[in-house]
Image 1 (tube, rainbow, N blue to C red):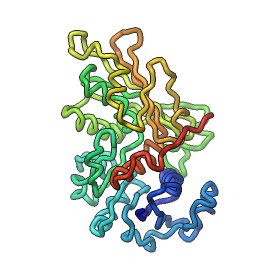
Image 2: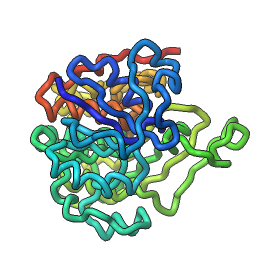
Image 3: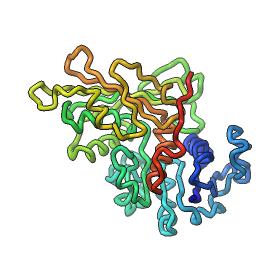
Image 4: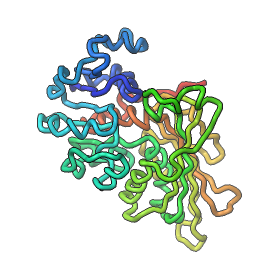
Amino acid sequence: MISVGIVGGTGYTGSELLRLLVRHPCIALRAVTSRAEAGTAIAEHYTALRGLTDLSFSAPEAARLAECDLVFFATPNGTAMQEASQLLDSGVRVIDLAADFRLKDVELWQRWYGQTHAAPALVDEAVYGLPELNRRAIAGARLVANPGCYPTAVTLGLLPLLEAGVVDANRVIADVKSGVSGAGRKASTALLMAECGESFKAYSVSGHRHQPEIQENLKRALGMDVGLTFVPHLLPMVRGIEATLYATRLQPDHELAETDLTALYQKRYQDEPFVDVLPSATSVETRSVRGTNLCRVAVTEPQGAGVVVVQSVIDNLVKGAAGQAVQNMNIMFGWEETTGLALSALAP
């Protein structure tokens, strides 16, 4: 049994962490911080957790986080990098659900996130927390950078194709859609129901901060750059990400060109508890993963026309955030990876 703290317990990822951790058999929640709600019982703020925890929110200064074995940061970008060093020096392991340690190129990070990095010395040490790519390194990590939601769906969708070399890595297209919870729990006119309901739009078409994260993932796996066009969209729903991915198949004289695509994915993910490869003709829906830590994927080549289409769906708050963070915790402490994450989807 380990003691766990959460910095930032009132955002969407913080509340999702609470939902998962209050039933986790190997941890005891020690502190959950919130400046605005300090002193308020967690079960009063989140009535869904009544009877599951007696904790109240703490002010960060009073949380005694250094006495924890592990601390999650479910905070905006720029918070964990201010506080992680002190916790690590105290022997506390850290998982950051924001983007502070995801990119190895500090100058690139500063350009995309618009602030000076406060802990560049920790960037090299931080392990990128995508288990399907970095499981061994995660196990021994002190500091884990939990992946972004878009990068999780896109990376898992593309990895088998690119690793096997059956598509052109110079021209890959990611057409990705997200529910509004992906923007976080903040007041924003653009996220009002009257603004985003009954509507659908692309945004950040000229460049989104998750693109360099995806490209860095793929380069880490392949040892080469990937030419990626990434366009995110906002859907009028609360949870879910659907990534439709397009890549040009190489000519038949390539040694792997005749590989059955679904079999390729099944082989790559056969030992992955949270990636479910569906038959190519299966409808891939976000509701099939709602509330779960699963990524479901299907791959096909429509009409054999030379373009491979991959569909990848996740719940952005679970496999795209809090669930993946718990999966990383399980790996870091040597527990069964699925502990606390045996969740079935909420349907309808």
